Image (cartoon, rainbow, N blue to C red; front, side, top):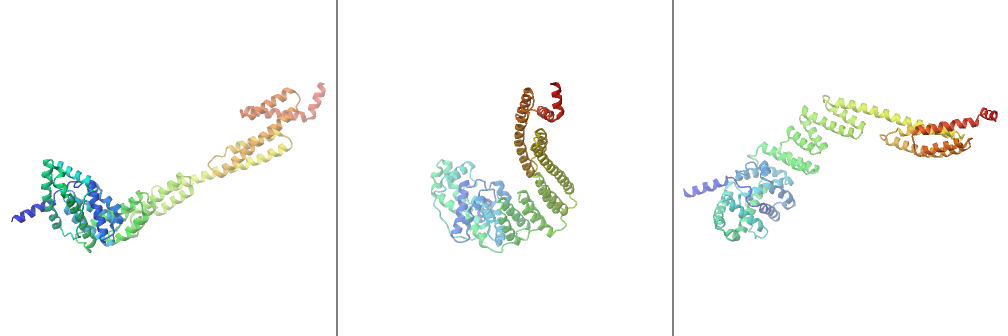
Length: 481
């Protein structure tokens, strides 16, 4: 009867809550990673190649751990056994980085339940764990051959050892002796116990085959979704595709699961890959209107982005594709029509710009004809008109803007040459005042003064040219003489 009572007491200890700080953070990581290296060295499985993922799992916060192993804080051993069953089932699909991550999380809980001082006074418990954390790299280890973990009996046996150790450690810390008492000579054994327990747990998961009884579809479904979230977070399409292939054996890929995977990819920016998931949903369930809408929205998003970059034809085509996928989409048609309107308006502006360049070039040619006969005033007027046309071409069209800029440069240079010719012509006019006035006006034009002054100069010079050339002017002058 006494033995039975003790057994029940120990078993009861297994199901009480384990403090989140069972072993310090450094000790937990060291215990779990050492167990992985131990199994690799023993040739069980090369876990050392996935030590990064194992460490990630071992470093989870209490909240993050609860998402993977519900009730791990209140019923840790039960959670360990449940997780072992799930991982044994998944093991048939192979060991991948996410599997290693889950092993790390499982190892964290195993390390916690095999730590001394779990139920001791919180003050002394923390003192002990802090002391071990500071010395974790100094301890010698006593590692044992692997053994299978068969239910609660394995942890019940370890719990009896822990209960005896806790009594001695607690006494030392209460008395003020602290780490210099029993802890100093036994902490290597206590660390080794946890490493061996983690190693045995993983060994059982990795070696035992065909264990699927008691693993529900919900458990497998959640595993798959969390695995895909893990790989999506790593932004690795190759890992995602490989995981898909491996996890198909779990037979949980319903339309809803594929939709959820597609959504997480879409939100992570892997939109093209997400559409593959949506198409896989439609292959299974062709009437899924929510998925049809999601694919149409994808093309709408692409079109909106193209529209912002002024790639109007591409945007229009994407809107059209969205309409093909979902003819009832509330925005696809209106957005397509808007794109069509913008294309027409842009084409009209382009035609206007090209027409302006053509007319400006014609004016340049006409100005050259006028200049060849020394009709500088008329040539200048036409060049100024050409300049206005060139300047009216905006930056919207790169090719046309370059052509217009070339025209501006050419006309500006030619105007300077014609102003020189106009000044030379003005000096031949009668009356010094007239010559000086014309020269002054030409100088003001060279300094880019207001167009009104320049126009006055041109008109005056032109009238004086006409007066000099007409015979009537000569007769009027002789008559006055």
